[in-house]
Image (cartoon, rainbow, N blue to C red; front, side, top):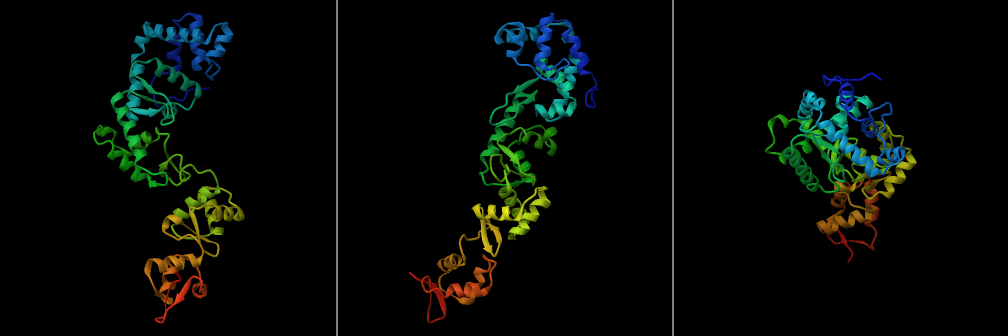
Length: 347
């Protein structure tokens, strides 16, 4: 397959072939297998190579490390310094620290070429990497101080959000920049900051481009109820469940059957039924329960009110007819009307 090398001036495959040519055959084959540098681009495990030669996986690791050490002492390694400098410049231009997949994809879309570039990153002296764990992706960097600042800032950003928080990307970038007040001006641009944000595995972005905890259902959408939440939140006002199903299809390209959508809205406590088939988000301040429950809350909060005053307040919370409110007020088990025609709660 032809190499796609728009981003670098040298040819990684040619360079790596020249480097490996100075090694004994078994050492060369071990490195080619471990890094996917031959016809097979899949990286082979230590165990598989050990089985091929009848040696332990630890012995294979020793051969690999010894071979890398030999390469660093070879004339070909010194002759490759220009290429290492170019790779270092690319990492620096992309922000000084970048996820491995993003870096390799930036340089080439060809898997074989990516393997050869990865090998050069492992071999080159300027390049350091952060292992992947539960908090961050595997990354490459050339400035350890900058890498530590980014990691600390991402941690602070995560702890500054609750599991329910969703914030616009522009606000997320602003908060991130606030955590990085002393970074170099050349890195103070939105593209670099977004690239740094992608390093975190604990922060994530939902299909609407809003950021929050990656584990939150508001970010990690798993089913219709999560898409429904995002659709209603984006709309900004109560919707009928049929409208919610339609909006899910338009916004996310997901097939949302009306009956399924209605069932999910009923079961999800993030939603409140505010009218006949109408749903709002609880976080908007809507009271859970039936119309009677809303009336009780209104009277509990405001004290005795006339029927028109009760109706006005309840209609802010429920999409129902005034007659429905009037009927509920007649329930003498819960409400009583005084001589001043004001309603209050039965104690």
